Length: 164
Image (tube, rainbow, N blue to C red; front, side):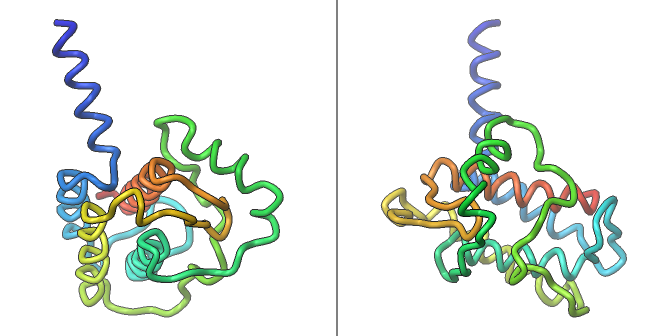
């Protein structure tokens, strides 16, 4: 019985690892359920805006794009990071967003879902050394473990926001 509990815990932890292929497959299945009629349970974004926001965030986390460091992040970034990833609980609803990741335009979610999925599929190919010197625009310097947990929670947060 104890071995089964430990194995279940290990599998649960693996599923919260953005670098795990099974995690990405689970996210892909959830993303495929989104359509233009998907409605947020909280917040102001529609499905298109959420998917584009998340894809741009993946570009940041995959080191394809950088954004200017936020002054408040310099002051409170490390404390906020700890609050966001210090537990296994979800991210808080309606958290502040970097201005460059606020999407205002409208569009067809079906035309951009694959872009997000293609970005997510890149995580399992990343190595810890790919993140040497990574600096998040709000949270500051992050380790690969912190990146994994934050990226996982961010994706899960927005998919849950839209009920998928």
